[in-house]
Length: 99
Image (cartoon, rainbow, N blue to C red; front, top):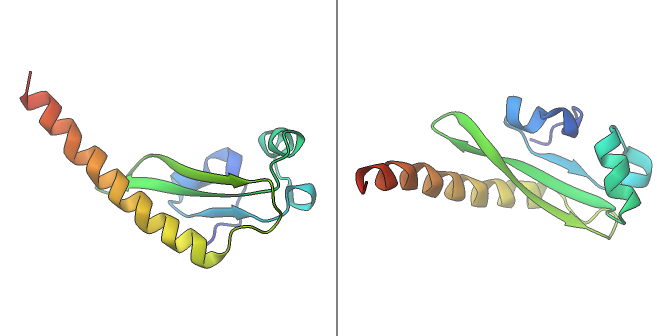
């Protein structure tokens, strides 16, 4: 599901939902998105990294093209992010046991 809440208020971390913006010229909801647009970023997709029910970060892709990311892209990126989060979660105990 794509989150419609403001992205730069960390909605993707709290609600653990993907955020997709297709046209930052028209969809800016925060100062952060204004900064991205000023840098030439036109669209992005942010998905949460969730390990054991906890948000531990985000996985983000940006584009200088408008409407670059779709619901299908968000779903694929979420699957990738899930694997990355699992790898991070599995890495932490390993590092502790090697000390």
